[in-house]
Length: 497
Image (cartoon, rainbow, N blue to C red):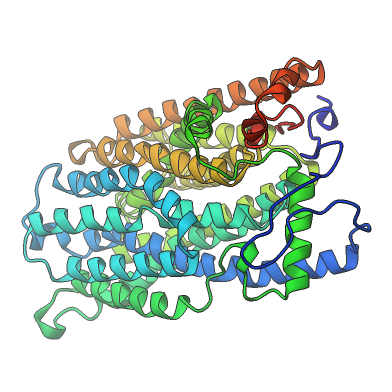
């Protein structure tokens, strides 16, 4: 496959001839300028890397821990103390996703109006408080209510981070940065087990069992970090305080040169129809849903799966650590290669194949050794975390315009989290330790992801050829107000795969 044919940068034949001036006084119209100083550009990108990625990575790690720490609490007596039985644990997992899915799009529209530093730190304080409440609840009903509000408060964080990062980097700079962000979450899965084990040693203090202290301490830590983070989370490039006026001008210019005429800076009725009616977003949802099921399955059930291989809870938590480390390494290597080669599809499919081999081994676990089953978990995790971040960045790469990226990030992550709902209901207690339904459904869904990735790649190739033949040029004849707000529907926009 000749990748270079389809990996064209998003530029028009000319720079926009008239662009508005932002509230900070920076001109977004950049015609007739001297060539960009590449040394200054490199310094700018490094500065963005220092200010944008680390703080978001740390905060999302805390969000992820607060979301999955229920799996560790389960090993420390959660179900017994709250008199849970049957599928009660699965219901507690499931209820999180109802508000999480419903409120992601509204949240990403709000963050466009509110400073990201204010919005993200505020919702983080709220879910930290809810996490503490999970540690003091005295009933199963209280746990379910807390899980619901945890989903409500966390709904805007991940898509908000994705949206914010996408506004600082060019297309072939984003995968590596996003995977750095994402790998921090993978590693959080590794040390969260040890942290939970250490916190569980507080059992008896204040009359609370160990699992309660897991929620209380981790929730309090989230609140503290959230308050401090208000002063470290970056805002939109136009108002970024960590950049000088000259650096902001350079950042806006380099992003405008790539985006060209593919802008969507107004969310009017026609823009809404273009955004919500875009087939790419719905295929992107299927891509993410299929692999996200595996991401949540491993997060919720890896400690349980390993403990049922015959190991103690402590040993199971310790032996989960190298699995997460390997997954983080493969995640980063795939991102580096994907950006260097300017290609996404092959890497997404590689992850699908690797995870599939792992699931096949687990489905046949009755005839394989414990060591082989343990190795299979490595394959599932590594494959999932190659593919999962690529599906997110790949779709974002093919969105043009501020509002289009906002809607895309929220819809793909929001509705893709139906994979989490599925994951929370397919690992049935009466089927442990073999979980035939859990592994079988997850294997099928990973291929839903693979098929959706294939459809997406073919669609991008076909659409690029149509634009090369001039079949979309009629859009240039639309009324000026609409033609300047087409987003990636602009005829000069080229898709990547």
